[in-house]
Length: 214
Ligand SMILES: Cc1cc2nc3c(=O)[nH]c(=O)nc-3n(C[C@H](O)[C@H](O)[C@H](O)COP(=O)(O)O)c2cc1C
Image (cartoon, rainbow, N blue to C red; front, side, top):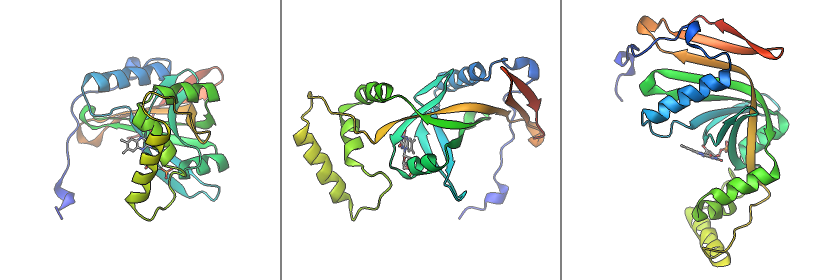
């Protein structure tokens, strides 16, 4: 394998000052996400979602951000998946965005709740037909299966049961979660590993902003 110890970049693209920050971290996040989308990054709305089970065992995976509103950050998944089981036992999560080309990282921590059934249903039907079938085929998500054929056969059965053009019902075990963010951190890489970091923490109705050691 390549010797990794000699591989490193210097981060020189930008700096982040307190005066650059929006007083509302959600708006700050939206600005950075829009900049990542405008920069044509590949799936800049993909995030790492860290959860932990009741014993504290962590687990992390990628999901797609489907909304960033006052109420929180929304993603969709199978409620019976490993992440779903973690969240049922321990309803908190931290999420991470890394936009390498922009030398930026955002982390957000908060309590997690399911979105309403109506909202999940509306989003389910906005997804492509094949994705709707796949949500049915992949259940319970994260369970072992003997081979890929099992999955393909399920998909074919579902195509026959719900031909394209007919409505596919949303499985009751599939839907959204929302992370109600109570702590944000915005990180901008700088030269010599002297990075800029700002953390927003809830303080009453507003936010306290601290600069953190890099
Ligand atoms: C780029 C990317 C996007 C993904 N988006 C989702 C998603 O939005 N929802 C989802 O359930 N899984 C998504 N996955 C798959 C998850 O990373 C994961 O494999 C799956 O949800 C099972 O995770 P779990 O066993 O920890 O519950 C995505 C994977 C990648 C690489």
